[in-house]
Amino acid sequence: MSVLPRNDTDAILRGLPAWARALAALGAVGILGVIAIWLVWVGGNTLPDLNKQMIVVNQQNQRIIELLLEDQKTTEELYRIMQRICAATARTQEIRDGCFDR
Image (cartoon, rainbow, N blue to C red; front, side, top):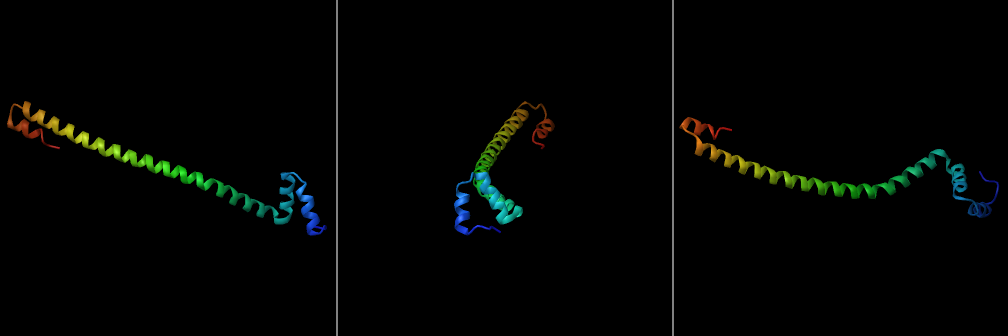
């Protein structure tokens, strides 16, 4: 507890550097209070950045999904073309039937 009246304490604290005011706050709220205030401050400054990063990651994931679906369509088209080539060049019906086995 401070020996000086409240107004005198405020006047003294105003003239101190930031690190000295932090030490004075430490005396007023204790080490756990300072840690809690610091965690709230860090969390408050970090959450908007995390939100922006999550939006970017979601957009990238959506683009990857679109590319995978496009790649799947292309792969299926190529597979059908290879089946037609196989069937067209097969010498027997048995080999031709084998072209369409998966």
